[in-house]
Amino acid sequence: MRIDDHWLDTARRVASPNANARPQGEVSAVVLHGISLPPGVFGGDAIERLFTNTLDPDAHPAFGAIAALRVSAHLLVRRDGECVQFVPFDRRAWHAGKSRWHDGGRLREGLNDFTIGIELEGADEVPYREAQYRVLAEVLQALARDYPPITTERITGHGYIAPLRKTDPGPAFDWAYLRRCLTATV
Ligand SMILES: [Zn+2]
Image (tube, rainbow, N blue to C red):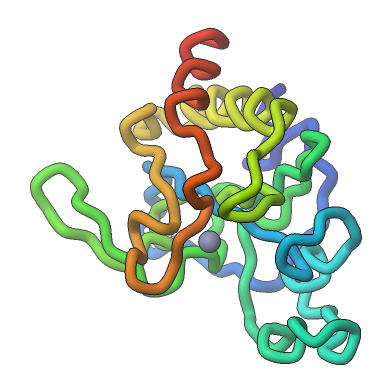
């Protein structure tokens, strides 16, 4: 797995218009998310449609409230481990929203500015799949190689950086297992 010109070579590309320049050019941390559309349903193209502003608000009762959002992530890791990339890593994707993080001694806000957003197809209470951990660990290793400020300590979750609004990737996400996968693939 390699990164060429800020795109993952193994990912299917679905370019999202929901992106812009990083204000300081900094790429130094990763935010993990969980998403499924409709909630709890896996498969289908609704996530890709949401991130490309083509989700039909009438296709499902859950879509009406979100179809007009302008959101994206850099990567989606599907249940079978397939990677879809929406935004090149040097651009700012719109995944974190209002967010804050203790970065060393300083409190930083607006994590989209300097993070890479990775969505795992899943739900808070449903175990993520082995294929997803395996691929995610490989992706994180590739990111750490190409963006040296990214380290194991600089991988966080949406629920940690927006705790009153968000819970993903949720209690089902096994952080300890991810760390073991990362160690095994070094
Ligand atoms: Zn999220």
